[in-house]
Image (tube, rainbow, N blue to C red; front, side, top):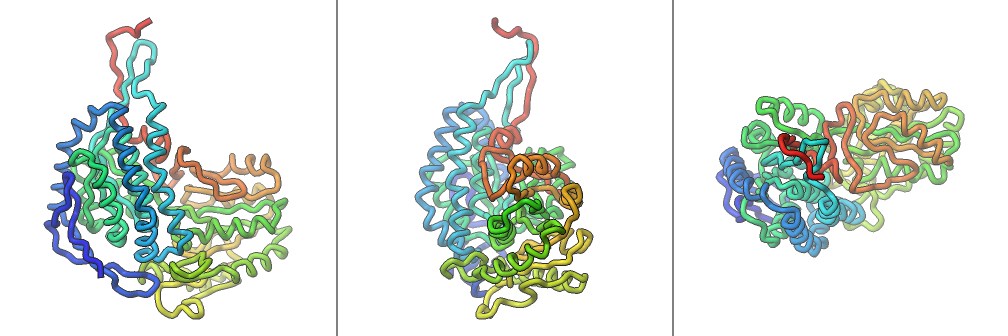
Amino acid sequence: MRTIDKIYINGAFAPPHGSEMFDLINPATSQVIGQVTLGDREDALAAIAAARRAQPAMAATSKAERIAMLRRLDATVNPRIDALNAATMEEYGAPAMIAGLLNGYAMGAFKNAIEVLETYDFTRWINDAEVVMEPVGVVGIITPWNSNVGFICGKLAMAIAAGCTSVIKPSEMSAIQTQVLVEALHEAGLPPGVFNIVHGRGDVVGAELSSNPDIAKISFTGSTAVGKTILRAGAETMKRVTLELGGKSPTVILDDADFGEAVPIALMNGFGNSGQACIAGTRILVPDSRFAEFLPRLKAAVEGVKVGAADAPSAMVGPMVSLKQWERVQGYIRKGIEGGATLLVGGEGRPEGLEAGYFVKPTVFTDVTNDMTIAREEIFGPVLSVIRYRDEADAIRIANDTPYGLQAYVLSADPDRARAVASQLQAGRVLINGAQHEPLAPFGGFKQSGLGREMGVFGLEAHLEPKAVLGRRRAA
């Protein structure tokens, strides 16, 4: 049993004022593996006060000083990759491949911020107006459980690059992973108060960050419903917000695609992170003209997907993070059946041989129309909907017929044709023929998938306020 009974405030580990104990569960076994003591509003206020005290000195740091901080963080976090992977596999149930991918993003976060910072000019001129990009102030960072370490490192790196202090509220379900990370961050020896981490519930610690006037900006990744709550709470103090929210991403397979290549890519995009991903390509759009050819290939591929615990060799899909999430996914599978979709493979219940844990059968529905619940709402599990389309224009219409717009995928034998389709899709990112990632490109969503952008220069400037200074002429 792990016991996590400290939070991190003002550069030191300390017992929280809060006393609520929260059980940590291994989702592959359903067994309790530890407990974390949750912070309360008093702990949030203490963390905010520490960050506020540290903000003036942090804002005054030079670019070189911030780069030095980021290098120290990189030097202390990267050696912990094995411990972070082990914690992710145990606490999140992620298969080894998934754990490595999730934490691999964290390993590059500080280097990416350094790369952006090295070439960024915080001062520019517009005729005789000097425009200075200044830190927005204290940042409240709220992160989810489906890539705990990656989100913390990515958001923290950009806050530091901008000269902002922060208060981080990670998911209480990820406390073991967070503990490994915080120990590494602490070793970097940053000035007290530059970052503070408080375990706690969203409706307690998260709510305080969202409403407290000393928090200038919120950076949140999570559900659209919670994002709207944060936005409403932050409006009272006009907080700057970056919200990376839900998705219902389309995978548009054009009629010239090689199905031998397209099917594995579609499954990787749909089942990645066990389907617990905002970017999951859960709507697969297939042309009428090749539908009969596509289904048997897809069915055979899904039947070959390995489901298992973190230590299962070649497992692609792990358990859902909790019983609540497992029940949610089961409910959507029932809705698919009751709504008139045809079950191609998978279905309710656990996979054979996996009676313990929160495992879900990789599930695919066909005869899905875009107005069905399973095609409209984010399921957050390994459940895919196959939707037929008549022609390219129809595919684009269906792909865009969603309240979301985080990511989209286009598969075609002709990259130029795929690019033409991509230009018409309403999504923050469109991936052509794969699952590419560029950590310096902007990431964020259209419509109800969020506000603002993270990563690269866009992520840096989300933490900056432009100030125009007039009255002295630009030097010749």
